[in-house]
Image (cartoon, rainbow, N blue to C red):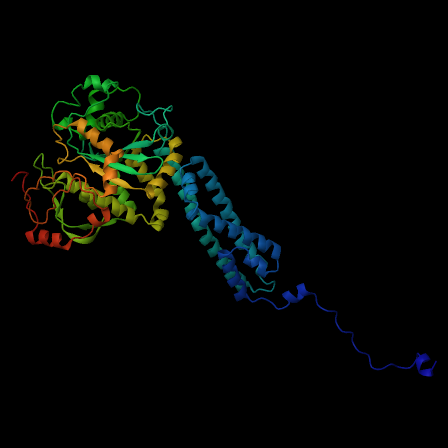
Length: 529
């Protein structure tokens, strides 16, 4: 060996520091500090897309779990809004399911808040100034409030819907609905009596000026609407009903005006209060039996909409917009000679509050019942237009409370699932209308046998008519209706019996409106002058 190799006392050279050990990837990812601006930005993103804050902070498993759950919930909501609409509708009519929905909304809301706060704490740099922490705290509080608003709104909607189901579709006692009868399972059609009542302040009792039967095919959803005039007389009753013995010649309550169809709801139970036995709505049972006999149909359920709360419904929606093509009277009674208080002037896109909308739908002085019926259809169409999703969510609780006040029905909760299924069929099915106006029957002397024949033909058309149409053979047409009497310019003539599209019928007609304006405002004259 050489001396160089064995001389341990020989200095090797100047001392050099050892190089630091290599840095771990985790520490390297955390080395560059995150600024306050980036932390606040990621916190906002985390409130919109939960889980992203944990991913940015390096807690990948937790972030992936939270983000995955959130995306699954978004996907489920998108499915319910499209392909799952029927499931969503069935949940909406199930009071028990709605309570589970409410509980789920509360839990998800709390978890959302935890994710926002936890994500901010995971992102916040250790060395953050007091001012930065205050700014971050304010931002987190604002985000929590923003998260709480939709959660609280959704919870209120769920509770309001549950209250509506429990209140409106409570299992009521009825003389014409029995648990043993299942119209959806036992028959091919379900028939619902739709009533429009005029009860309100200053009015004695309820008169049903609107009487319509909706007959729905439970397999296809095809629907036929049968409209009866308010002044129909001698309403018959089934032979096996106690009402047949009381009214062998048809309904009568002392005078002609008190014996019309629109007076049966009020006067029948008044004169014979317990004749049908225990029932929560005897007037509706009177009409179900009588109208069913008149049309040759079994009426399964009824729905009554009372105009007493109609104006509150419109106000809850924030008003409606309608087109007015002729002078519409506000109040006034042709029967008593009471003059209108004012008139609604013709004009397009008129914004109306509840009181004015009620006057628009109800006004009849100097006009016909069919004019009023047409405006009522336009009012309903305007309400549907006003009920956009944002308005419904913001005011749903008020709307649900109002609905319970103005709508009554004997449809039980047990039938709501079936009605949901049928409603989805009706949405894409054919809807036809048959109006029993004075061109078809004479309301004072109605031919009920003829009315039943018309109903049978409407629900089950003769094969010969279909074969003739298929072979190009013309089918006989009904005789033309008698010409309408001369009316003042701008006043519409009745088009009873005509099938018209609601949207077209409610459109602004500048020619008719101009004629009405040129004629001037109708004078306040007594009826018959």
